[in-house]
Image 1 (cartoon, rainbow, N blue to C red):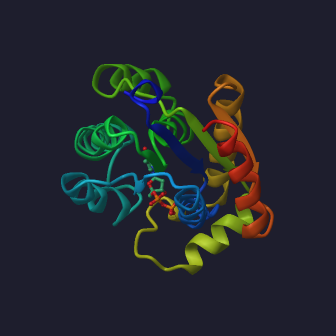
Image 2 (image 1 turned 120 degrees about the vertical axis):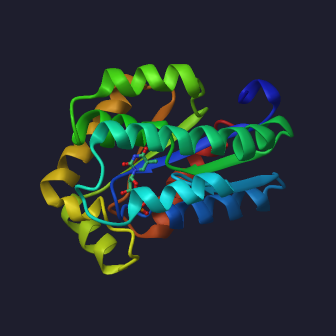
Image 3 (image 1 turned 90 degrees about the horizontal axis):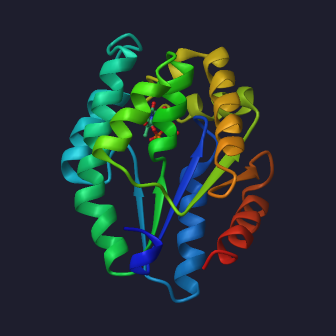
Length: 209
Ligand code: TYD
């Protein structure tokens, strides 16, 4: 579904407030400047039905869903996103830049919210079965990222509201993931000015084009 079809599937991952959406926009502009067909998309969401599911997940009380229920909702949203947005774009040879993908479920639900990694992996294997060609993990100091995320007052702060120790568990989870999947994952130092982060990312991506 990915490289073989001519497209390139890139995901951006990291804790809340690490600057993924800014970097996703800058990377898309850079690749368009190189003449590539690029789509920018995000999870949870990225297709009409998946965006409806997103509201259920990111708004409301932190205790609204159990980690198990969250895994099912994120997976339902991801399947819709994959069918309707990601797979068609890769099939026509586009670069897909996705703000979060399955690694967020592995880390948020599989490690930080509960010890549910086996369940996450089983469901992923059955209903998703696709990995990005390249995953950029934006690594950042949790206290700084959390302050930034909450300052946005997006109304989508259900996960930010789980607090600093939760964000610290997430950071360790993403670092462990980078060690588990060294060929696919690249760590990016996100404690820098956004232009410097963008340059690091452009260098990593251009090596894969
Ligand atoms: P996102 O829109 O990326 O939020 P932010 O811009 O604050 O990083 O994602 C919304 C929230 O959903 C975010 O707190 C991370 C969480 N999430 C999971 O817990 N599991 C998942 O599988 C995904 C995709 C996101």
